[in-house]
Image (tube, one colour):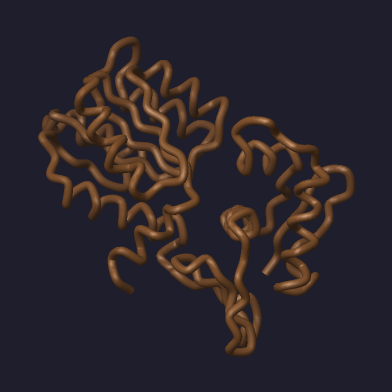
Length: 229
């Protein structure tokens, strides 16, 4: 797969970036906006932790030295309620103490400042592959698979196009296979503001079932759904 295809995996994802240097934060955000659907930047560890608690992010990129709470402490606390989100560290620190702390926190990539843009892009490729468990396609059943980079289904050698909402929800289900996902979790993930009612979720699920078959997405009465493959 070409590298730009890997980065296409990020096109409907949301990333949180934390750095107390305004110029560096702006530079990183400008790069991230080329690949991510939503980019949120904050300037200290406490704000980063609050954002992670109150919103769903697919990726996090943190500096270490920040006011109020350093980046590694913020990630340590985030790991208590989110063990899977990919995290990239951008830091001037190269001390063994910081490196060992980062290892314990399941960091996808540790980059030192001043960073080179190509190094950040390579780190984002690793993040993208981690988000799809290093499998850019997922087989649903015989002759039916989902392509994460193209955001489309292929069934019986026929391409089935998905809307942005359909592909985003389907990938959310894939990232939470065999787990119950509630309507509230889905609404938080799909919409940042002006959340619709759960009827909007039901409508997207209805269209997905038409395209992939009804056996994959199970109704969990009164709660939400469970995706089983």
